[in-house]
Length: 419
Image 1: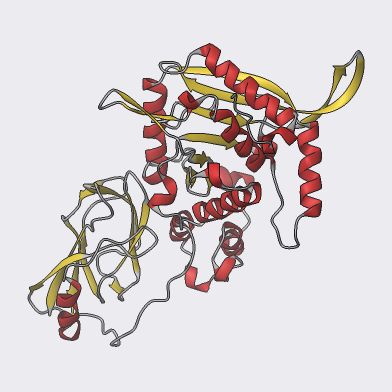
Image 2: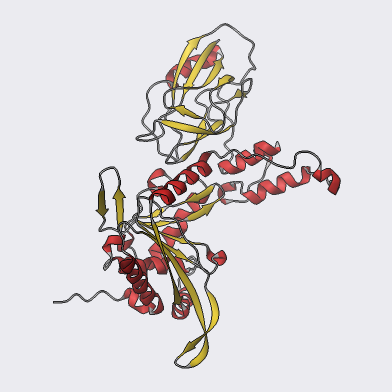
């Protein structure tokens, strides 16, 4: 018998440590190579870490919420003699992997005293169940084996409704008195993506003097155009929402307001103005808020932007988005969709200096040319970094965006430059 010490992998350039989100193996468990053993979170991404070898878990380092330095021992395995040779091979250096792939492993095999160990058939591997880290945690807490759950998502992926259906039958009916028995509060440790979101939001709100500006926009014509484009779109094309149209209009507006397509490098005290428009799309996922990025949106057409938004949103929600797809935005658009409310005060996605929020579009009576008519109205809620964007410029930018959205044909007309 021998021991294999698996160290915290290098999960990306500049990563010095990672937070333990959830353990899927504990001391005494017998695991097989490629079986999910732990979920970790860096300041850039969530990563599922598989077992590099087959063996019995002797010890683990770090409880959920604690951080482990890259290169420090993470988990110790006891190997059978047949597995020891493979462990030495696994310890060889490997290139850094992308977020979507298995992370680079680091491990060393060391001799240990013989001890009883459960037998594992050579070459056996645990089937990887496709689901999100949040669903894995929920299943673990409920004592549900995900291997027994049928997935209805793409490729058999287990979605939240599948898991809830599997958990529900095990719950026995309780009387009101029984339901109220026991602890009346539950403590939830703030870890993983939720901790990262909390830290970033707090830092942005604390360090950035937000200037909020809300404007009412008549999107009646925009809605008419949207419906027309959806009806005339080729079969199989996804339905067009307001979001890609707003992104198209925003690209046009930034031609005149380049000071809002900027990143603030606080360490150097420099504003980095970008010619390319990399639009962050705030996306709610089962694991929390993520901001995938539509890169070089200024060279894409309307349908290309719409398709890219759908693709990135799905990858973010299924926890497949790579680090490159989640960083590098120069301005962010956020929408609460049907829950959009009347107005909101979005928090700037630092180091950006502006964020545009879409609120709910509703039909309302308005006065137009002396008569009361029904129009479709939507508010734009925006926030700007008041250190670098003056209130006048912020208001002028939103007014320019309003002009494009109220006359949507102009979004597609090239700017006429003065001779």
